[in-house]
Image (cartoon, rainbow, N blue to C red; front, side, top):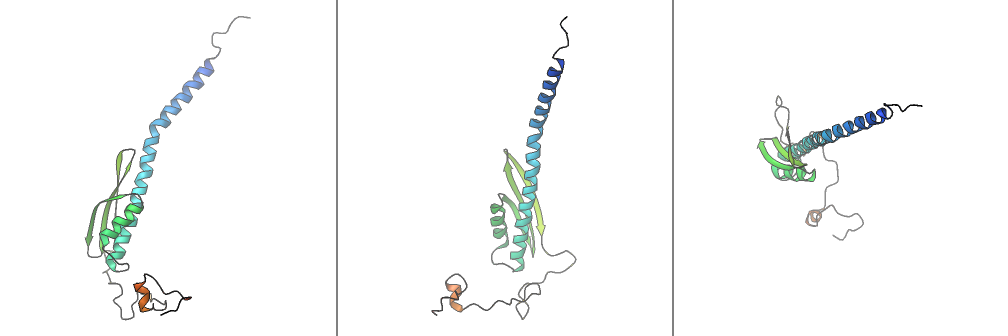
Length: 155
């Protein structure tokens, strides 16, 4: 029997294909991570803008851009710029991933073709047309930082 000169050629070819795929995977991994980070940055900007717009409308207490910054921080982003124009809030954020600053931006507020309505301005105290049907708090509940406890009626 004579030795075959092409013996083992398929093994070398298979090793070459696997090595090429690993190099391709290693090259694409940072791109995939950065694309995922861009989605997270956009989601953080959306959440921050919505929180800021709720504050601007009066649905929550506080300063709109401070609320937006707090929500962005909770989502792992940093507010680069926050602009409030009436009840519209525009937020630009960044997230640092793999040493790269990934941007995200969002705007929240009422639709441009409909005027904003101040919340809690109705005589019945409704928000978005929905009346708060919870029982009123005892005046001392606000001093203690929360609603009165039904089991403790010391006041």
